[in-house]
Amino acid sequence: MADIGSDIERPLGQAVRPPRAARRISAGVVAVTVVVLAVIGVSGAIALRERPFRKPEEVAVSTPKATAVVEPAAPAAEPAPLPQAQAAPKTSGSKTGGSKMGGPQIIHMQTEAGDGPPGAIVIHDPSTTGQNLRIAHIPDRALVESGETGPLPVRAADGRRPFDVYARPWSGARGARVAIVIGGLAVSQTGTQAAIAKLPAEVTLGFAPQGNSIGRWMQAARQSGHEIVMQVPLEPFDYPNVNPGRNTLTVVATPDENLENLRWVLSRTTNYTGVMNYMGARFSADAAAMGPLMAELGRRGLAYVDDGSSARSLAPELALKNGVPFAAGDTSIDAVRDRGAILKKLDELEATARAKGFAVGIGSAFDLTVDTVSSWVIEAKKRGIEIVPISAVAVDPEKG
Image (cartoon, rainbow, N blue to C red):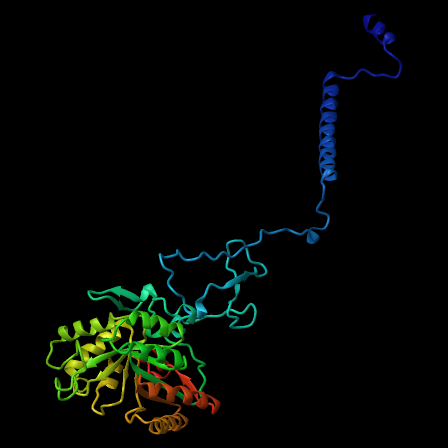
């Protein structure tokens, strides 16, 4: 009877649901609810994004811009001069497509001198470039070492030579070239001043080591654009009756004694490209005496200019052996101190230059020579002759 009463009280149409079945349905509802909420959450997150990735190929990704930085060299107490084409360049950098920060980049350079088209990559060999004429009177400290009697020329740690750095720039053209060396400067103060002022800047000047105020005259000459050489007194035949002067290098002296005298000459000033003999017919014909001199010049990066007065000179062979840039004079232009005779010698130089490409004339700083050379150079230029420094016609074993 109790079961019948319970059935009567139960609402119509509803059957008895087992308890386990009811729990199974509740778990399924919960699971579905969780899934629905997750979908709604993800959809909402996507909808709320500021720029959804609907078209990934149109999305621009910005990359930090690389900047090329040029750090200047640490300044010395007195600024060492740089070669003209090595002056600090103006740079502009551009990143190649697809490159990454910190990866390889091509930096296009434009120098202040404008050598090359805008943005061109210009590579210079420092050994082929002369000194900037605006600072040509300032010694390059990298090319100087201290000696017992004064500063001595030396190769720089990067391989640059005084021959390269102190050379006067020239056109590099293949036309007829004439190099003229006027020696004997610093002996007469008024004569030296007149020679520096009157002679065209393309004329090379030779300084006598026995002269006075050589450092001051060197600066004046270099500021005027001249290339310079130092004259070395070498033993002539009939020495000492014929005497080149103080600290002459001789064949009877030991190599150490001759090197000591040579270094005294080299220390008299700075900013020169090489040395030129003063006399020396006997000395230059002696291999035992001449060999150590050439070895010292090669070690220091200096040229040797032979005035051409002795046919027995061993200088060409020894210069080649020791890596010394070498030039030889074709004629002495003022052996006869007469204007007409000097002009004739200069015209011979021009003919030689047209025949073989270049010629070298050697003279002294006499007033007549200076005046004659100055006027001849002006006319020779009009005829297409290029007047060049002695370094421009030197044979350099290090450059083939």
